[in-house]
Image (cartoon, rainbow, N blue to C red; front, side):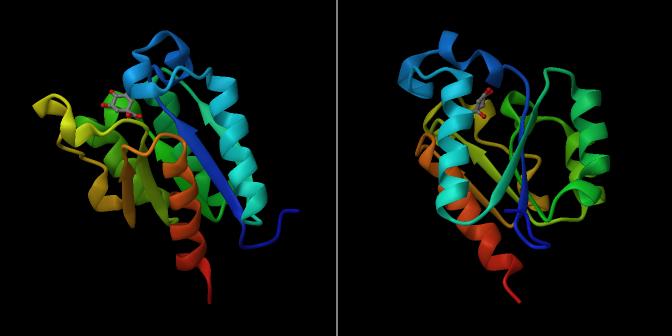
Amino acid sequence: MPTAHNRIHVMHGVNLDQIARRDPAHYGGMTFLQLEQAIDAYADELGMDARFFQTNHEGEFVEELHRVADLADGLVLNAGAWSHYSRAIGDALQIAGVPAVEVHLSDVMAREQWRHVSVLADACIATFGGKGVEGYRDAFVAIRQSLRP
Ligand code: DQA
């Protein structure tokens, strides 16, 4: 049940809708629908009200971030490859102004060098990676703690 403090926007960026077709060693072989259902189950368990958004278009992602303050109390985002270079999304995250947590399904620090950098991390209260879908549970817990009066 949505209350003033538990609405969490879960935003997925470029290529996340295709995870079933990506390397199962990194993405676990699940479908995007299964991923969202698993995240939603974690949200329910923790008493959070999760809403979902995904796009492959950077400008749409930015515009959703512009709306987020009206839609949600907190933000969990996996921006995919944009995480590593999109200063535009980093700026939009600052504009969003709600507590945000960055999640990566795979262990980006154990992959190619270019994935080691996040240009979004500075605008987030925490980053979780390498734990698959469980990273989203950690993200909800971190946001819940930051929203607690
Ligand atoms: C990802 C990691 C990124 O490096 C990659 O570009 C993705 C997914 C992850 O969830 O592990 O698309 O964000």
